Amino acid sequence: MSERFYASSPLALGPYLLDGPEARHLATVSRVRVGDAVCLFNGNGLDYHARVVAVGKREVDLDIVSAEPAQRELPRRVEIAAALPKGDRAQFLIEKLTELGVTCFVPLICCRSVVQPGDGKREKLQRYVIEASKQCGRSVLMEIGEPQSLSEYCRTANAEVRWFAHPGAAKAELDATTKSIAGMVGPEGGFTDEEAGAALAAGWTGVGLGARILRVETAAMVVATLAAL
Image 1 (tube, helix red, strand yellow):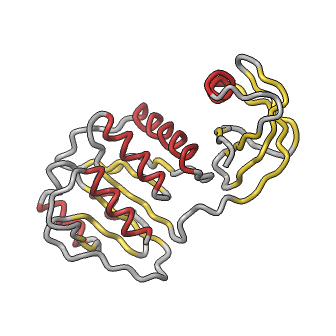
Image 2 (tube, rainbow, N blue to C red):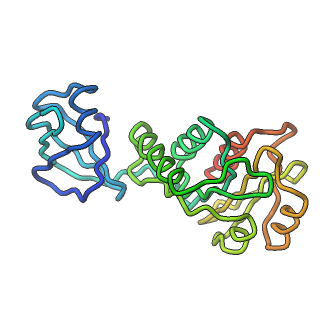
């Protein structure tokens, strides 16, 4: 697979001028030369194969020669809502959920949350999605949803199967024909009894993730993996 770069604008066959940070990375880090092959994507599900025509310090002229669907998405919609962990662990969480094929991530606000996601945080999470997509080959970007309280998300999440991770609950069971799954993961201290009760009352199913207590990012990855199988 050619080295992949993200374009935030519409793409089509023919000449294309790549500028901004992606062009600088292409020119100064990847050190491409005229004639080299690169792959562009903009989140619409297609891979755009291009050849380098000219290289400048801040711009790279490309010729897009073909476009093809990238068949790398899961057969079902998987949405994960989780309380954001501190520091670099949030980046790790987003990167891994992107790699696992999650469709949408929703920052979840719980009673024991330690990180309150604002607008700046959401933009930063979206940048992590782009970088992870470049690496793993996804051409559809994982969506970063608006932060929601647990009570709001319990009411509004639209999925055939709705799980929340909870110690002591039964193992997850999934029908192969399921088309959509929503999974909730609480903060470091877990969901409160009141939150777990609210989820159950709203029709959610508690799922256990094993005998050990997992960190937020690990639990979210496990839920995403179970949903993807």
